[in-house]
Length: 112
Length: 114
Image (tube, each protein chain N blue to C red):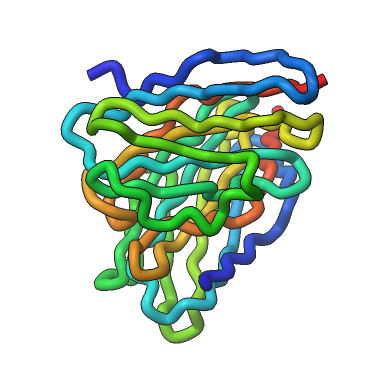
């Protein structure tokens, strides 16, 4: 089955700096790569996703890049703000049912 | 739409008791997922339904766990008998079609088994 690895597990940045979270996956047939943000005590919420037919996607301060050859994808957050502090999960679809396999999460802390 | 609705939000029970968690997916979504989240194991997929039919239950920990989806608007996850190691947050999510489309999560049920 699919194996998704996510790094780092914790990340602290100063407000205004950039943050980068990286994920690798094992199933070369994976085609859909969403990123979820989970604030403390809340549900995971989709913040951006990318499909395998594109290499990069941007939405205001967040962007995701995908390298299918290397089987890795990354989340980039620019001009970080304290409200960006949360746990971020990457995921990849896999299997005959194309269900999502999630990474282990990254606790991002933006220091004011 | 109210989104994915889960109940109860919190459940505290004693070891050995039966626990039933409930989920109402977003209207029009034909895929439903049950996840368990713990600090140690992260977010794990337990079972996945498509058009009310269980497609993949390989994530269900053991026979004490069972899930049903009697119709398109309702699903249950049952634990019988419950054990302290079942304590976790259980999320239900739904999407329009399989895993390729956006999954929307419910608010979760925080289960504590004493």
